[in-house]
Amino acid sequence: MEMWLTRQRSEKADQTVQSYYYRVNQFIEWCDENGVDNLNALTTRDIFKFDTELRERDLSQSTLKNRFGTLKLFLSFCEDLNAVEEGLVKAIEIPSLLKDERVNKEKLASGRAEEILDNLAKFRFASREHAMFALAWHTTVRVGALRALDVGDCYLDDDDLDRLRHYPEVGEEEFEEIVETVDTPFVYFRHREQTPLKNKFEGQRPVAISDEVAEVLDAFIRVNRVPVTDDHDRAPLFSTEKGENRMSRGAIRRVFNIITQPCRFDKPCPHGRDVQTCEARKHGLEQRCPSARSPHRVRTGAITHHRDEGWPPEVLSERANATPEVIRQHYDHPDLLKRMQSRRAFLGEDSEEEDEDE
Image (cartoon, rainbow, N blue to C red; front, side):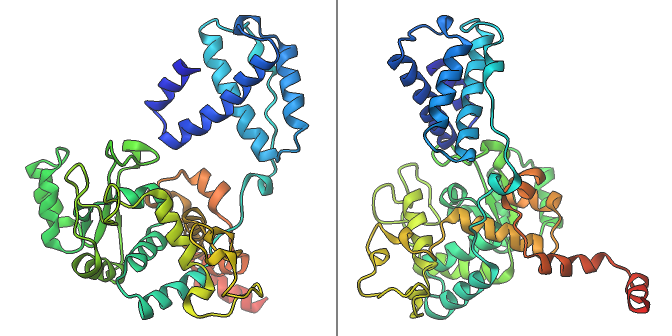
């Protein structure tokens, strides 16, 4: 298992490898409990016994699919090393899922996102929360990429383009061409050892932002950002005076859970709770609010919003750093009426006249 995980670490994000460890280690513990101390002795009967016991735990089909899928990857590696008998992997049946079972449709609706942005602009303009949420909604970014941003990754006007000279992939000729052809503002998500992106170097990408979002970022950097550097002499965009001087993933998730609670902006609780006694108002328990949305749910809503606005999956995939297939399967939860309206752009005037004649 450790040999396999070592190879996964060179290709996958740390969080993915951690989830692999949890799933495979559960199987290893089962082997210990059932007297299997050598994988060469593992039989298809053992696989079916483990399969049956796992299915009896009343786990969701999605959870079972993930666990058996990871186990199959691990045992395929073992089969390549002749560490298990040939054909054993074929005994693992991965549950198939309907589309509704493959996705979690809990997302931040675009209407709520706009309301949150309006409240932040009115009451907390250019605060860290405002800059973070505006950037996340506008770029569809993951929490790890938000955390990885440095101040120097923000190219808010043409003068900032000079920083690109310092990157080895940009030569002098390429730089002169960039200055002539590339418009600002944009942010550049970069994979670095201390702040890895989910897809590592394949996740590196510049993402254009609107002038409105750039104005928020500029004001945040100049006025409200904590002016510190981290242990690697980098200037985190979303800095803090605590710990590494860079916000942790957990701290970022907490910010999103807080600002997506309606009561935080003096709105009545839509769930009939007393704001004074509600447990979701306590530190560390914010996610217990039914209206709270994590960064991933904000990303889901943002991708859906982009699709409702007419962005093709093939174009959006580069912005969101996800394949068109993944966008369609896991993130594309449309408002069907909005999606119909966005498709009208593909209708010519002749089509519209024909519809009217009919």
